[in-house]
Image 1 (cartoon, rainbow, N blue to C red):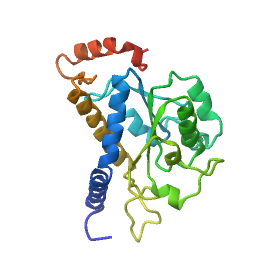
Image 2: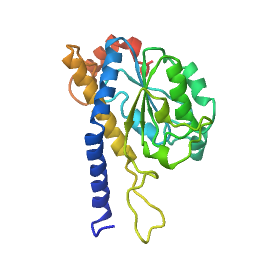
Image 3: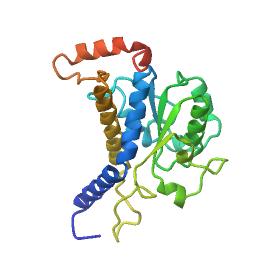
Image 4: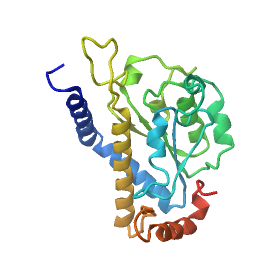
Length: 251
């Protein structure tokens, strides 16, 4: 490591990753934003899923000021967030075969919808099975993952495949295997993960593309305003009433 303070080194690493995403994923961001705009325009619904810390980026899209009102969270009991007790149970559930299919079969997802599946490694049974089963249902699947894991780790799904292998489109977060940007001689493990900030920024770039694409087509994007801005609650109420059949977090 250089002589710079760890805080500066981490921020520099995150900025470098964001630049890589901007430069190397531009076409994929456009493609995903266009797919989501197509889904909105055709009457489809939007869903996002992530397990463990990957769920943070999914939750960041839902009921979000400045975000699309139509983005819904696909929840899997015990794996959305790190509030499950004990915490390692959530990681164990990601490796359970059959869980994703059971969740999808009881969810509102249907043909013509779009599903963002966020999984840093993309190697566990849950995201792989979810992508496979969702596509079988006629759902368009976007994988948000670090493609490096497929080259440097072993899949935990019986098929030997990864999330990226079962998606209509893939966004590569560029995060290195292990998700830790810093090392120090006197610290026994690498530290300072950047996947949350990079993945969230990547997905917000997609949301911006979706909104702008709809506007370019002469359609008003279904956006939410901050409830802390005067008139925000009234605005959001009108949007949610207009799209009530495609919003599931208010029921």
